[in-house]
Length: 385
Image (tube, rainbow, N blue to C red; front, side, top):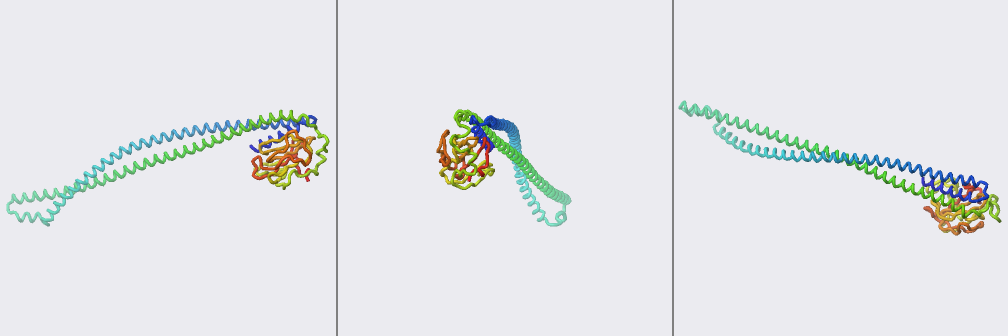
C-alpha cells in the first residue's frame, strides 16, 4: 500500500508538471490523468475506511468474546470458592474422624492389655484346666461354682477377642473413609483448578487478539491520516504548479529539441547503474528508472537544458529535483543529500544541480534517475551514453 501511494504520488506529480505547459497539445489528457490519480487515491481512502470499519467490527466481536471468557472465569472461580468451603467442612469432618480413630486406638490399647492378662491367666492354668479344677474339688457345690466361673472366664475371653476384632475392623473402615474422602476432595479441587487454568488461557488469547486488533486499528488510522494528507498535498500542488509554471513554453528557447539528443546525453552522475528500468530497489519496489550507485556527495549534473520544475523532499524519493526540458519531456533526480537549484531556475547540460546521497530512507548512497514523456516513464537506456 505504501509503495502504491508513493508511485501514485510521483505519477500525479509528473502529470501535473507536464500539464503545466499551456501550449502542450496533451494538456487536457495530462490533467485528466492527474485527476484519475487523485480519484485512485480517494478510492484507496474509501477502501481503507471500509477496512477500518471491518476491523472495528472484529474488535467488537473480540471484546464480546473477552467479556464471555471473563464471566466464565468469574463463575468458575465462584465454583472453586464453593469447593473450598466444602473442603473446609470435610477437613473438619476428617478431623473428627481422626479424633475417633485416636479414641479407638486408645481403647484397643486397653483391650490389648486386658486380653494379655486373660491370656496369661489361661496359660497359667495350662491345658485341661476344667479337668484339673474338677479333680481338685470334693464338694459338688464347689465344683459347680468352679465350672461356672471357668465358663464365664472363657466367654469373657472370647467376647474380648471379638470386640477387639470389631474395633480393628472399624479402625480400618475409618482409615479407608478418610483416604477416600481426601482423594475425592483433591480430585474435585484439581478439576476446578484445571478449569480455571483453561479459562485463563482463553482470556489470554482474547486479550492477545484484542491487542492485535487495537494495533491494526491504530495502523489503519495512521495510514488513513497519511493518505488524507497526501490527497490534500496533491491538490495543493496542483494549484501551486499552475501558478508557478504558467510561463514555461512547450519548447525551450535556444535549446536543441530534447528528442534530438537521444543517445547523446551523459550519465547524470559518476557511478555504476545497479538497477535498471523495471527492476526492484532495496525496498522491493519496482522502479521506473535507473538506480546509479554513487559516493555520497558526488555532483549530479543536468542531462540537458531545462528549467527546475520541482526541488523539494518527496516521500520515497528523498530530496528530489525535476527538470522540465520542454515538449513534454522531464528528468528526475532523487535520493540526493542536497539540492543546488531552486524551482524556476534555468540550467544547461552539465550544470551541477544536486549532490548524491541516501535521503528518503535509503541504506546506501545512490542517485535515482528517471525520464518521463507526458508524465509517463520511459527507459533511459536508449537516451544516455
